[in-house]
Amino acid sequence: MPDFSEEGLDHYLLNQVDLRHRTVGRRVEEVLTVLRELTTEVSKKDGRFQSIAHAGVNNESIKDQPAMVSKWAALLRGRCSFNPAIQVRPTVLVLVSVPVRGLIGYHEHVARQWRYYSLTGSILPTPVREPEKLHQWLELESFTSPTQDWQDAKVCVEGDIVPAKVVSLFREQLETAILTCSKVSILESVGSVVRVAIETAEGVMEAELVPTVELINYWPKKARWPRLLQRWPTTERARCIKSFGFNLMATSNYHWLLSFSRAEQALLVAVDEDGGCRRKCYRVVRQLKEDAWCPGTKPVITAFHLQTLLFWCCEKFPCGRDWRCIKECVLRVARKLLKCVSQRYLRHYFVRSYNLLKYSNTTELDHTAQKINDFIANPSLYVH
Image 1 (tube, one colour):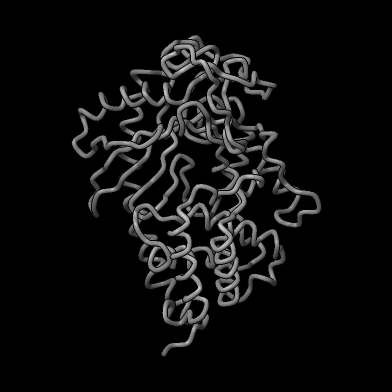
Image 2: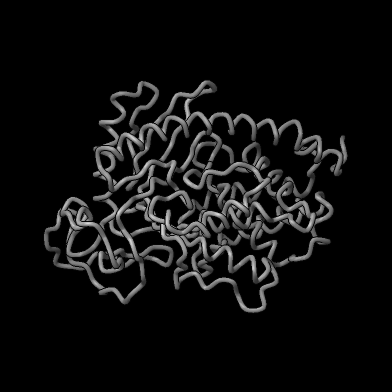
């Protein structure tokens, strides 16, 4: 039986992790090419939606902020390529943020508590459910200069920009654009997203397209970060990361989901500046999740969960010397994951009061916990 060693981990990285990474990378590039063309066509028809080529700091709304663009470019210089519009979930599914245009000058204010309207605008006898900790309402009054298009009843009810209505409008425009693209087909979607299938040279990939309000150079009050006496990342790095802001994604009917994809990527690309092996560790654990712990297209534990777990581990072990031995680090992260899965509790990294496993299937979590425990008991059976 092979030993669980650093040499075995290096072999695993080279022959399995890197191979999957390259395969997924090729697929994602094909998907991006197709979706850039489609979202460009949508933008020509309805200027409220931008091409995904303008996501993140390439957003047209911050063209007058060259310092921000320069800061982001400097952070990513020499790092792996990254498109802020796309997040790879399972190997065959990507989440794509479609940036919107025309909502300028965001500020948080005390919003009214209750809403008594349906998605069609009709009056309800009881209020719509309040948003949870990782969600919020979005009112036109939150912006100093919203364009006239956003006051249209197609996307707005009683002063609220309603995500389900925004998604419905986007879907209409996308369906028209797809008529000219034989590689893409609309799939039946659950919830307030647009799901499509895209043919690539290495198989079909699915993408969930979500209209997204990108709020750069603004940090939400719900995200009380960094925490007092926090040693990772450095104060300077945390200040830089917060300047990249956050997103509001149209993933439910009434409420917008807070997303911190730019901040998370900024943390991830610089995670080993002190020479540690954190990123290698993350890639090994992610491969184990894909192969052994919870494979499939709808896993109970996703790459986002693992990334969040890595950030918490970096806070608990902030020094580079704690991340020298990849064998010990992989086992450390696996034990931490086992604890979170067993307790069914994983805090969101920025909005720490929110449990990312709150609505996860408990039976699937229990099965995953058993598989992680089997790995910890005998890791050489999985990595060699």
